[in-house]
Image (cartoon, rainbow, N blue to C red):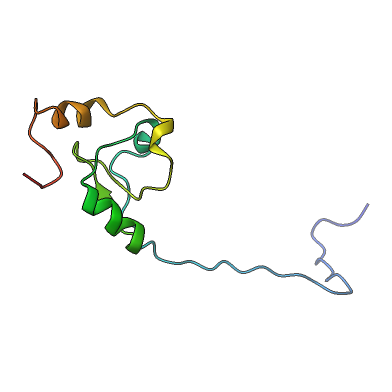
Length: 96
């Protein structure tokens, strides 16, 4: 057995090294992580087009903020968005 207190030998031959590159996120965090993946939300049409062109997040009628990227037809409609769309509640997206 070797002495555990002895200095470690450097390996002979090529070595590989890795470095960690940190970067600042520029996309705002989703208000409730994961929620946008469970529902399709109602968003003003002009905001959807702007988001598609710029990559900026959108705000749904219910107030959820995210960057669209999935097919909304594959998910159930957000109950809060539906209620607002049907006129039962006031929009939370900053619009009228």
